[in-house]
Image (cartoon, helix red, strand yellow):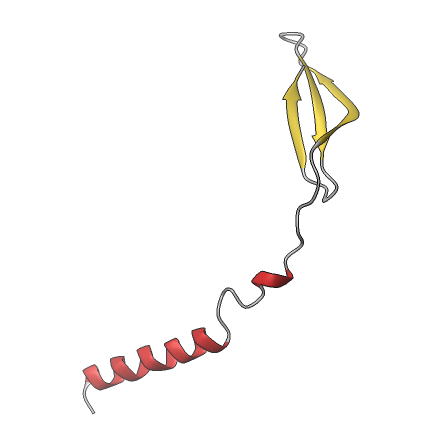
Length: 68
């Protein structure tokens, strides 16, 4: 068998492995993000400019920082 045959075999085996155990196998089991962002009581003040930044979060725990 030549090098071309080995390359073809490797590509076929890789395709089968990806089809069986592909990257998107667990796509449906990811945690859904839900709800809108709501402000929290955390506020940061930039000492140089004096601008206030409030922390917003959603039910899944993601955080966002918005200037007031």
